[in-house]
Image (cartoon, rainbow, N blue to C red; front, side, top):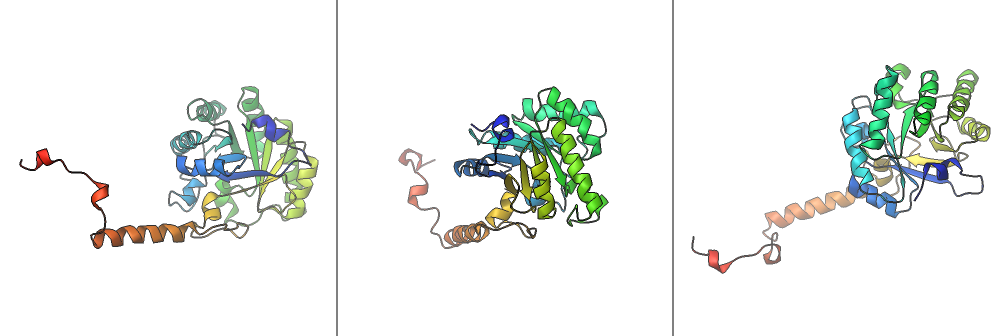
Length: 270
């Protein structure tokens, strides 16, 4: 079983950490069977499977429900649940309660925070209470309105230095790992070199300690995948073929066949 300590103690000679999102039990089972280390119940569910244009409409109830479904589908992988928009940052007591629910009620192993200066103290507070925290810096989708889009972050020396300093602050506060998203590869490499905790990149080049992608991008189910993602299959085509086959079989009278049902002679004359 992969634990928080396994991830935290990841060394340079270890194989890269693998992380994928999942939002339901069947997908979580497949991700685990493939040997992926960490399953992220991301607020990316807003874009990936809920039909929203951003992650902002995702609620605590959404994450808690889907985290529970994912936990029921895995035995070995570490399950990390995203803290959704406004579930933290306004009131520390509410943030602690929300994070605690994801562990005590949904069964997640850790939470992930999209970070800034305001989350350093919260990270330390959560860790001290026994709630492991994965930090997330660089492009943080919950700030899409502030950024004005989905572009790269840390593209100036000033911003890159700010991200590095925030990464160090969250590591010092007790975060066990850091997701770094959509930043120049050389910036991600320097962050990785500076931290004693592992980094997990997404659109951040090859020199982080691991990689994460959204499962619908990997499977070929996304309508618009980001430029840093890679499609490793065409599940959408297989699904269309299966659904077309079902429709044709029903319309042609081939389904259901005799083996798909049963009859009882005692019920012939009602």
